[in-house]
Structure formats: C-alpha cells, structure tokens
Image (cartoon, rainbow, N blue to C red):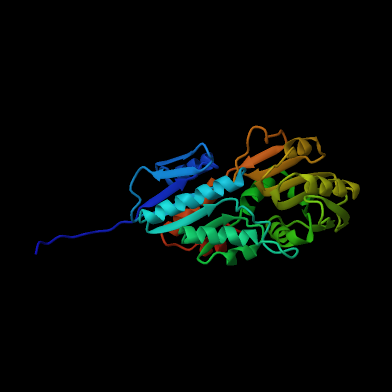
Length: 328
C-alpha cells in the first residue's frame, strides 16, 4: 500500500441572490473572498432559473438574500439556490437573511389566517438550509420557527455609534413608538445612557398601516427624541409618532431603524415631515426613488462578515454578543 496522506480543508462559499448584490459584494470584500459564480435569470413566464458555474461540493455555503420588493420573487430565488446547493453536495448551508420577509406575520391576529413567518422558515428548512442568520427579526419568537441553529444579529451598535458621533447624547430621550418596541428601546437606553419615553397607541385592525396615537408616557419636552424601531415602511406610523412628540414639546425628532422598506411614497412623506434625520442600514437595497435628503444609510456588511466568519470557523456567535460587538 502506498503511503498517501489525504487532507480535507473547508471552503467558504458566499452566494448572493439578485435582491441586494451590492451588500453581498461588500460582505465578500470584508471576508477577503469572492462571490460564487452563479447564473440566475427569469424565464418569460416569470419562473426563475439558477445554476452554479463552479463546484460547490463539500463547501460551507452562505446564501445571502434580502427579502426586498418583489419579495415573493426573491424568497423563491433563495429557495432555488438552497436546493441547488443541497443537490450539488454542499456540506452545510446557512441562509443569511438581512431582512426576513413576512416577519410581521408572526402570529394569528384573527381566525382563518396563516402564520406566514413560520411558513417562510419551513420553506427554507425544506429546501435544505441547515442554519439561519438574520438581522433584527421583528419578533424574537421567529427564532423558534426554524428547526436548526439561528444567529440573530442586531444593528443597534452600528446605529448608536452614528448617533453618538453626531448628536449630544445628554439631550437625547429614546422613544419607543409603541409598547411592542419597549425592549428594543431599553437596549438603546442602556447603550446611550438616555431616558426612555413610550408612545401609547392603538392600531385600527381594519386599516393596514394606520394608527391612532393616544399619549406620550415620559418627559420629552425640549428634548431630542430618538424614535427607534426595526422597520420603516410607509412612514405613516413614524410621522404620526413624531408629530405627537412635537405636540408634547420635543425640540427635534430623529428616527433610527434597521430596515428601510420605504414602501409607496414613504421617501417623499418623510422628507416633507418635521423629522430631522432617518438613520437606517442597507439590509434592504435603497433605490434612487427611495433616497431622500434626510436619509442616512449605514453599511451592515462588517456585522454580517464578522458573524459569517465566526460560524465558518466554528467560533461562538454568542460570544460576540457577550463582547458587545453585535448586540448591546
């Protein structure tokens, strides 16, 4: 028998769908690697075709896809990429979802409704995903929907660093736009050392994205109010909250959120509002039509790259949380 020594080395494979390629390229740059060569296109009837142009056998694959508009198309494309990787013998498949689609449909509000966030998770698992990585899930319970390891990352420190550099923190009051965001707002108060206020509101169940603001709990008079949330969608809720804060004597209102959905005419509405600045990350692509003067977009790429590198090297993402680099 000949004396032959065999060695196996892991290979990191970073794959990008078409939803947010600039973010994927920025993550690849942070990792010092290149995106996998992938052909993806649409057939005339709307069906999606994907094919890898290189071997993926035995790789530790990370499939990065933001669930942006058109959300159903990009979710389906991600499922096809996962399935292709599984059938081509990738060793492990991690789904990297900077923005998790359908996250706001995480429970049944009334009878005869689906739990859509759970279904998206089930689809990923069925397609062949072994692990899920996401940024600022709308609710923490979504972590329990995925039958496998989940890395829940937070953009708080990235956003807070920008706030510290540009605003006198001693003048800030952190404001939760509703009771459901209080835990998020409390993390902000821990990081900035600022007082907390809460807007008490009631949502009209028959009119999507419409709320009736009732009152502000906490002192905001002559304060710079930092409204913190996970998503800025149509802008309606945020603008109403800001107007209420001004009614209660706030000197200025700044918005900080992880995900810039910016549906419909949100950009125009926010630009014309009395809000001073809207700070978001690039978990979702911001198109030219969605851009406006008051908008500041911060890169989430270093955060994602750090977490991907930790998972690839069998390190501890929890330890990153404990060190305060990914979570307050």
